[in-house]
Amino acid sequence: MPDLEFRSANRLPLQVDAADIEAFILAKDPQASGKWDEMGRAEHARAFTAAQTAGTDIVDDLYFGLVDTITNRGTEEDYSKLVTPILRSKGWLGGNEDRIAHRVALIYDTNLRIARAAGRWSRYQDSKAALPYVRGLTAEDERVRHPPKSKSDHTAFDGIILPLDHPFVAEYWTPLGFRCRCQWVQMSRSQLARRKMGVTSEDDLAERKARIGPPVFSLVAPIGKQLADMVEATNAERMPGMPMVDAGLTQQLGEMAWAQVLSQRSFELLDAALAKLFGL
Image (tube, rainbow, N blue to C red; front, top):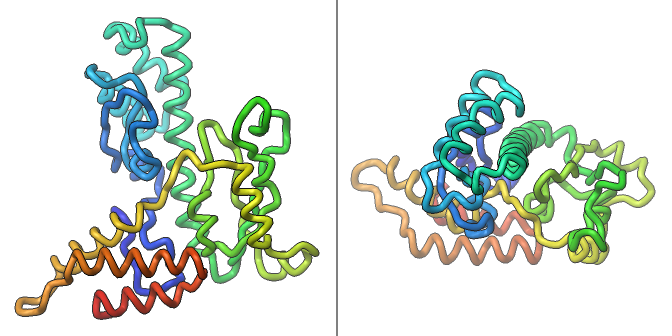
């Protein structure tokens, strides 16, 4: 279940998915799609899909095969052995063995990377008091995405240092794309003090962001969806006779407050807005 703890600005972003890999996979909703980018980044984090599954009945085969593999502590090889014969028999991707093998491996890898990333976010939040900063790291080898082979330059991610609560960290929570090996590593205040460069400046961050390009995935629900969930949960718990939270007004004021957070990095603004809207 999503974490709807929003009473403190220290819990931003407002909503964090389940940390446990098995629970994360089990909570997904299988959805067929034609092209991978038909769904938004946040939807990909919560739904299970695979490109070229629209008009077929194989998305459930792919999903429940993954569930079976994860719950039985299987491997990528176990997943492939389980689903490949089914996909072949149904003629997916024209029954091409190489294409099926590649896609099955990518599906397995992508879902586990996203599930582990969700768990890492939760653990980092739990240890934030002692380790309030993060540093971006790459694998530092020739496989790191960079031009001209790729439009995205993940070498620009290496060495970014920011507070864990910085909006950029949530937006660019790794993985940044398929088979991306970039990671955020937590740092203490003393570790930061020993680094001469300190926290990455906003100008430097903007330049790096342009080089990295937009991330493929997002583990944080859009602010509108989070506010809608919060309104629904709050109204469901209201005592008889208490006024309901106005969903429309909450959406409008909450999104305005979040825009101020992103532009001014003032978490107090959002905390005050939520306190007013939800009567905290």
